[in-house]
Image (cartoon, rainbow, N blue to C red; front, top):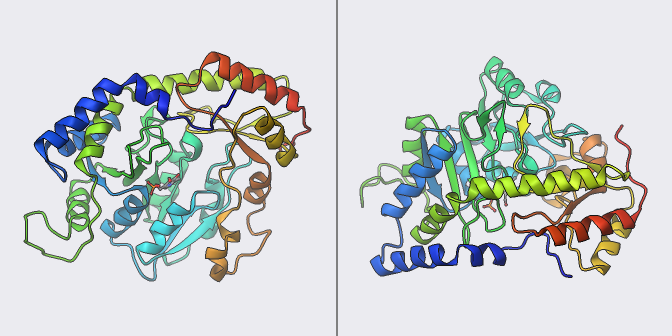
Length: 372
Ligand SMILES: Cc1ncc(COP(=O)(O)O)c(C=O)c1O
């Protein structure tokens, strides 16, 4: 057997006729940028997120940059985010001209630790970006309370969490603004790059829409200089088709996760803990082991692909050497990062494949990390 970490082909085959006709429709109308399919997708995705509005943008990294720009955040400002996120989060902060400030995560959920936020707030702090990593929502009440107490904006990085809920509320509708990625492997993935910004704040949405479209809402009228970062119509049409299936796909991910959790309960491997208030959408299924290399190799020998999300916390990446943060600055993220492994997770994983993965994971029989 050969089991990828994320497989996209089976899903395309399942919805081929819907996708092919959506793509043909766009080509037939030659409406490649903007237009009805984009407008409808924006409406439908906002409604799915239980939020007022959405702007389709070029990708999830731009979504973060554009959200911060629309909030008026820039040079001399600081933005706090989790140190174990994908670099796109902090790239978005830097692109807006602000400085990323990292915060450590919780050992069990591996998400931003709200208890560590206040110590990172300075007079220059303007926003917090909680990252709903692996599909799990962050502890949003506490984060929102701290933000309100310090008059900070909250930008949700929901790139990995389309459809997740915190205390019954959809991610994307809780903070001031939320950013999504539609990168192909995401829970809602396009057939190329794509991103979206969701918010209940109509003024913010209008500012962002203008800035992302050359500073223009009416053709050749430019009140300001902006950038070109738009979700193209082909991607919007594809995403409209896929959005109709998202709930079912997230449900399939949940079912795979339950099977993994049950199978793993007889082993020493430690899965990520899901907070009792969280409804996760299992973008990734992550476990911890002290012998990662051997574990990954044994699985690879059996045709099972695994991943590491992510191999180095951001403060130790060469790109952030200038921040002067040494090893030991974020002990929990540093330890977790050495031990995490992502197992294959995508809706179309079959029962046979899942059983094969579990059997081999158990046989890998390695000693694993104990949670401190
Ligand atoms: C947590 C997180 N934030 C932001 C992004 C950026 O998204 P994109 O790849 O669409 O730029 C990604 C995905 O790649 C991500 O995983």
